[in-house]
Length: 147
Image 1 (cartoon, rainbow, N blue to C red):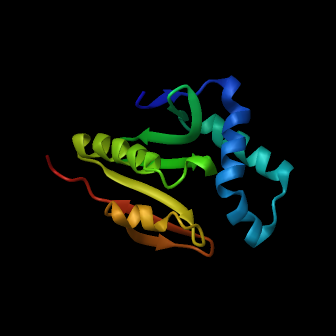
Image 2: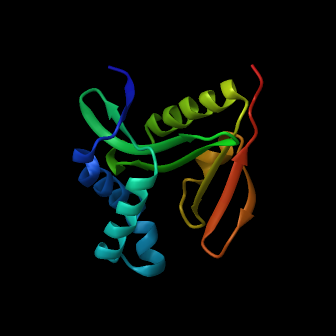
């Protein structure tokens, strides 16, 4: 069965937090430690303000993503693949689906990530370039590719 993106519902909040903890927890921990209560509240705020999708492979949830099509760009984020599914091509497939949407609409794609997160290589392979940074994050964009 192919990879699917399904709109998340309230019952998947805990799974989404688990996926975040699994995917980014080690990178957060290195810099600040992992404050479970703070992270949970931060996750709750993002859960309420972004469109979340659950990534399914066969009948198993393997991660989350937020693909937010705005008038000026596509915002790609909350991209968390469970560790046992990383480096098998599913992340690239999810990203390519989002980029296809952006390309079809003629929109830039924006992302951000922690500077010490190894996801950088995935984004570089797909044409993203850093346009800004702060102490902790890189902000990247990719121009749309004409069909």
